[in-house]
Length: 523
Image 1 (cartoon, rainbow, N blue to C red):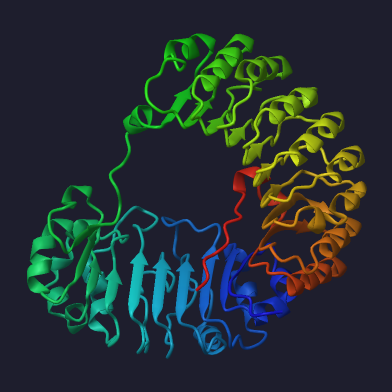
Image 2: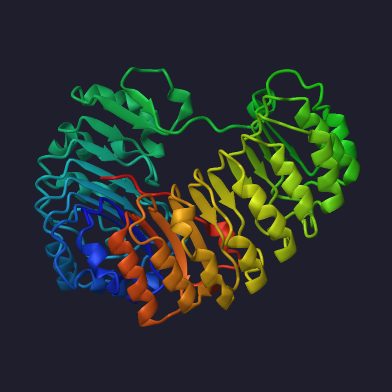
């Protein structure tokens, strides 16, 4: 197995890291997400052996409350020193959370990105020697009472010696007043050596004074849209907030809380200009409204995406979907269709016919649509015939032995992203994963959590994707057994998986609401 360039793990327990030590050993980039409660156990697992190849580490607290109580650092000084000593080649570190450790002194660290009071209340980053540190970003908000830090509290930051530092970004820091109220700020050698400086909002009004005092500064980053274009050295890092008017006048259009009469008033059929994305949220469209929506979509052959994911109540039934499908006809332009949470049980044949008339569909979402095994027996073959499908989102459906019979015929040469999360997988699901790797040769992301996979299904999945050349992101919930984790470890050792999410179903009510299959960039 070649070096794994990036690995992301969301941990439900420390064992999730311990049992994947081989995968950690060859990782150069590691992103670990865990709760505050499990942080110390995660660090303990990381310290089991030196990580000589690891150069990029992110430690992210998933239940982090930026405005919450900071408390005392979770790691002692001894444990903090041991952590950095176990990472001798570290060049980039990201910390998200309060009171994680007691500072950092590291000889090779070049980039430090901190969100929160990671080293304790009022403690500034890099309270030790970091001779190679080139960029430092620190963002934080007020304390649990909403009180922001005063500028004097940051004096220890710019008073230290960081000879290689060239970028200091404090644009995300909540500071009560301007940094210029402290005369030592602009006079500090550390500030004068910078080429890039990000100003907190309280100092934005003093941007001209900052540029005048720091002639060597190449870029001044601000979060104020009003300063856009005011000076060639000023960069606005946040775009102006969109008030929604641009979407209505551009190629994307959204309707909210609309019924049949409201859709008629929108006059989408005669709407001038290109319409490429249409979202209808919290709708209560009935059969006539569904028919009008189909006619409206047919009137815009340039339409590429139609999103009906958020009905007001239970959404469309099969009669409304049929009216829509008939009115739409064949639509070669449509590339994305979202029908999540519409109640489409009994509509398998209608969906099959609809998909046959969408030859260029690339994304299909049918999650939580009440489709049963009989529906799936008609829908899955139709999906397999879509020649350009890349993303299939079908979570929240029944995962019975009967539905497994339908799923095991899924095949696609183009499918890259598949979501099948559910509340419970029955034992017959091992047949679904049998040779899935061969049936889905282009698959890059697979999401099958929400319910413990039976051991037989885990074994079938691990065997199906053993040696798979494309699978890079896996979200899964295993039965809590040593055998299951060993199977997963073997799979990771034989595949290019770089993003692993292991999570307990009890931590959220709807797995689909928390899906995260974005592969981290290679460091």
